Image (cartoon, rainbow, N blue to C red):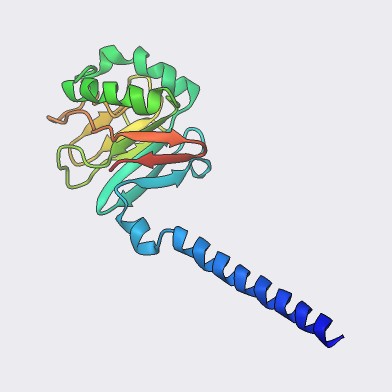
Length: 184
């Protein structure tokens, strides 16, 4: 009986020891908060951004928007080219090759745009409704009140903007499963 009790106690202690070692091993595999804060990319769940909405984020002091475009907004990208100041800017073309690799194969529904337009003190804000007095078709877009600049859902500046504003910077990003990673 004493031997049976000793054996059960030994098995119980071995199980507790193995559980503790396994738990400590698994904990070392999780990144620390400092490691997460220092990673070179920002990550967000796609479920946090409903279709037709844009969310503002800041990562390492860099502000940006993530826009979840609707089918209508995606179709508008080609429809409004004649209304844009620079629909095929070198910067956009250069990034498009990279974007094909990173995002277009995953989803054209999402775009990540820099908040800052030509170092504007105001930055840009997303608007579902056309700015007051806007005569052109509006599918949603961005507005910079300081520079009187208006942008489409791809961050391209409209020709009617009254300033010297250029297209917003498209930030490379990738989509894996239900997460979007922006390389800010």
